[in-house]
Length: 302
Image (cartoon, rainbow, N blue to C red; front, side, top):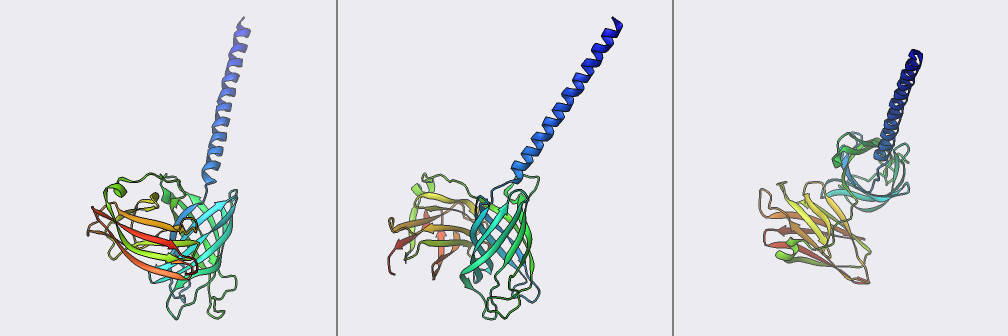
């Protein structure tokens, strides 16, 4: 009887050890699986940061922003290089993203638009980047960083050197589905028309900057009453979005709502509109009673 008790206790001990091991194994598996889900993030959205060039470059360090769409590991989008609203280069980008290794290869293609000093020439760049996510939960905990080089080691004129450098980008916005209902600010405030712009182009790229001193102005933007920007702070780096110019819907209305007045009322913004070869620079003002309205009208053969 004593031997039976000892044997039973041994079996119970072994069973408890087995349960502990299975719990540990399950916890480890869950943690690994959750980590994989966390790492394998979609890249859609806006990423902004700094690009470092060689000391001989026109701008040794300047701002850069990627607007990325990623599907099944294929990347398309826009790269926007700028030091301010008067020195910028915008290019189409394509690339690949490996979720297993978190490696991005992004290549700049044709130049969509640029305005820089006469003694400067744009470089076409190839980026080798990796995706990183910190332990926090905020958007800026996500980062892509790495190096860049020019495939030809020359600028687009074929003469100026284009030495390699580094780049670091933080996620600013994710691609999200925003509400289509009207804001109270659209109902209660009057929309003041700033300008009508007639275009024969399939897409208008829009950038919003704080006009002048950065004073805490926050804005929301609606395109045909649909929210595309919600309560974002205006800075020296642009808020970017696109407006499709559809021949079947020839009028597109963009409304900027001032969510506050900042420290220097009213709420003011610089809007840069790029569509095909056309470029427009508008100054928008919004306050407690009015919003700023820009109307785009499709006009074939303009």
